[in-house]
Length: 178
Image (cartoon, rainbow, N blue to C red; front, side, top):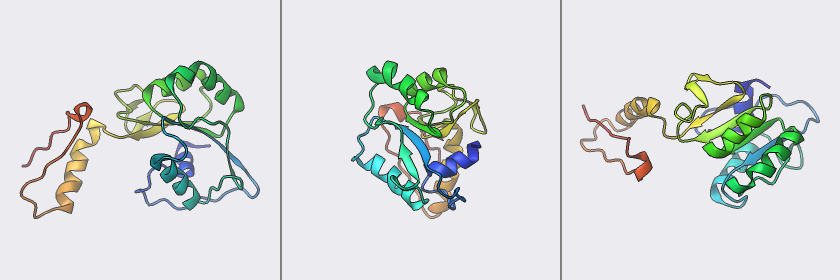
């Protein structure tokens, strides 16, 4: 499965205008999802809703190969090899620590990582160049700060004062009004 097809497959970015890709008749896609949120929590429910909107329905053409929802780092030693052995079509991962364990464990299964910064975490040489079998989303990538600022200014051309709230991890986000 190619990287771009994989991103369309999992539908991680709801804001992207993606269309449903052609699916093989009768094919069941096998997906592993490894997150720190439970299956019934809002982030996971939104992810599952997006998959359904793209035509991937659990029990019909989508199967989860693990119960990795609400995963913690202590489980890595046993869960990572089990998921890799199950050979899913892709593994969706939230968090750097566990993504590093999967990066060490497989070079063939596509890994889709949600992290603060793909480049800083070492998963990509640049946002345009993911490494090996890893792709994903940089949530707070400094490389995108300028673009985010441009979009903000385009969306609010009459604004005279703009404030951004951030937690201590995201303190690097500084908006400079020109």
